[in-house]
Every structure is written in C-alpha cells, then in structure tokens.
Length: 276
Ligand SMILES: *[C@@H]1O[C@H](CO)[C@@H](O)[C@H](O)[C@H]1NC(C)=O
Ligand SMILES: *[C@@H]1O[C@H](CO)[C@@H](O)[C@H](O)[C@H]1NC(C)=O
Ligand SMILES: *[C@@H]1O[C@H](CO)[C@@H](O)[C@H](O)[C@H]1NC(C)=O
Ligand SMILES: *[C@@H]1O[C@H](CO)[C@@H](O)[C@H](O)[C@H]1NC(C)=O
Image (cartoon, rainbow, N blue to C red):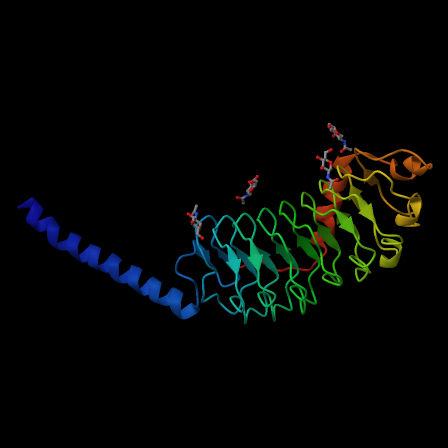
C-alpha cells in the first residue's frame, strides 16, 4: 500500500525532473553550448579533461574564455572556433596536440592569451598566428618545436618557448616583435644565436631567459645593447663559456623567482571582463 501510494507521486516527481532536465538540455542547445562541456555560462566554457578528440561545436557567440585543457585533440583543424569574435582566452594545453592547421585561429581577433603548452607540437606553419591582432601572451612551452619560421610572431608582449628543441635562433626569428617584454627560451638546445637578433627587436625586451641551452660561444653582439641598463635580469645558464668578458653581461641575476611574477603581471595587463 505504502509502495503503491508513494510510487505515484514519485513517478510524477521523476517525470518532472526528467522534463526539467530535457528542458535544460534544450535551453543549453538554444543558448548555443556544447553539451559535453561541464560549465557554460555564456562567457566561460569549461571542457577540461574530457578526453575529447576534437574541439566541440556550438560555443555561444558571447564566449570570452574557453578551457579545453587535458583533452586528446591531436590536430587542431581549420575553422573550429570561427565566429567567436569575443574570445580572449583559449586554453588548449595538455591536449596531445601535434599539429595546428594554419587556419585554425582565423578571425579570433580579440584573442589575447593563447595556451598551447604541454603538447607535442613539432612544427608551426607560417601564418598560423596571422590575424590575431590582439594576441599578447603566447604559451608554447613543453613542446618539441625545433624551428620557427621567419615572421611567425608579431605584436606579442610575452612569448614562452621554454623546453622545446630549438637549436638555432636566426636574426629574423623574433625581429617583428617590437613590443615583446618577456622572452623565455630556456631549456632548449640552442647552439647559436644570429648577430643582432635582439637589437632588431627594439628596446622593449625586459627579460630574456636563455638558461639551460647549449650556447658555448655567444658573442656580445648577439645580445641586446640594453643589457645592464634598463633591462631586468637576463638569465644565462649552464654550458656557457665565460670568455670574452661576456659573463658579466649575462650574470646580472640568476634569480628565477623574479621572473614568474613579472611574467604573470605582463599577461594581466590585458583588460578582461569575465564576471558572469
Ligand atoms: C587519444 O587519441 C588517440 C587517437 O588519436 C588514441 O589512440 C588514444 O588512445 C587516445 N588517448 C586517450 C587517453 O584517450
Ligand atoms: C599538464 O601537464 C603538466 C606536465 O605533464 C602537468 O604538470 C600539469 O598539471 C598539467 N595541467 C593540466 C591542466 O592538466
Ligand atoms: C646539447 O647538450 C647536450 C648535453 O650536453 C648534448 O647531449 C646534446 O647533443 C647537445 N645538443 C646540441 C644540438 O648540440
Ligand atoms: C645548472 O645546472 C645545474 C645542474 O646541472 C642546475 O642545478 C642549475 O639550476 C643550472 N643552472 C641554471 C642557471 O640553469
């Protein structure tokens, strides 16, 4: 009797919940949200650690921040993020990415922070960051990048290329980065840096980290003329021959702890409103 009595309202409640759930799902789709993602508020979408093999569709046009960290997206293909005219922050780190198509980020002209770190990227095609006119901070650390095409980067304030496979830095590699303040090239295999590489960048560079590379005969002419003047600590690490008086130029500070706060500060300069 009890069972029978309660089963009726229970079924009702269950149906009601089911209805609500379906309605919510429907609303989510109407608002334009990928149903696989955990959180979708119109401005932020969280699709972290879901094992996704591709970037979901249906992001709301109002999206400012997207987390896609910790997925299994081996190739970022063209136009998956097209139409997100307000997207400012994109996390694509730790997602087993080995290749990014040169048209992957077209029309993301408000994108300010792009996280591609902790992936398996080996090469980057020319034009891959083209049109990202607001891109300030680019995170590419912990990949397998061995070559950077000429003119690939422009307009950045902060570029993190730590822990890659770079061997040669050409004098044109960073020459279009006239606003760059922070350049992290530590833990690569750099054996040579072209003459005047840093001079060509202008005078905005504040921190240059070259620690833990294979540099043995870097001449002062490869170094920015501002070293020792307005420049913040320049880190030169192991395997650097101390000859030709260059040591004092590079050894101004070995304090890594100074670098991190400055870096995050530079990337917070972008004006973002994420309150939802
Ligand atoms: C990631 O995707 C590849 C195929 O692209 C698959 O072989 C592998 O098992 C996937 N890994 C995980 C953890 O899902
Ligand atoms: C990404 O991977 C690194 C190293 O494998 C790990 O330290 C970090 O916690 C991971 N981050 C996320 C968001 O999974
Ligand atoms: C860099 O140095 C490491 C350790 O000494 C060595 O194994 C490696 O072959 C060197 N790489 C290059 C490109 O010189
Ligand atoms: C130099 O190498 C040693 C060990 O090989 C390491 O402990 C130290 O942090 C390195 N210094 C720099 C500045 O990279």
